[in-house]
Image (cartoon, rainbow, N blue to C red; front, side, top):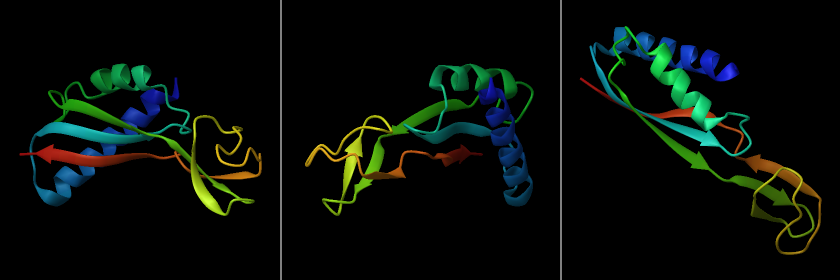
Length: 113
């Protein structure tokens, strides 16, 4: 389950930022998770609760914002929304799509005190 390792990385980032910015408690952690990131959201929620125990984010509320997949259609020369990596362009039906969005996992926002 690589979601536990991702949560460990999130905890490390929070601790580094707490040292740099001087906050002592995290109330909320907001994440952006792309459709093609390979992250299982429920496993991430579980891992977050486990990994944050004993940290300054132990009581933090986790918000996950899921972004849709995006692709650049070569024949249409425009960006389109796609549900899966190998979907056809919803406008012209071409499979000549380059994924341009939805592969991310990032911390969007921390609410701290």
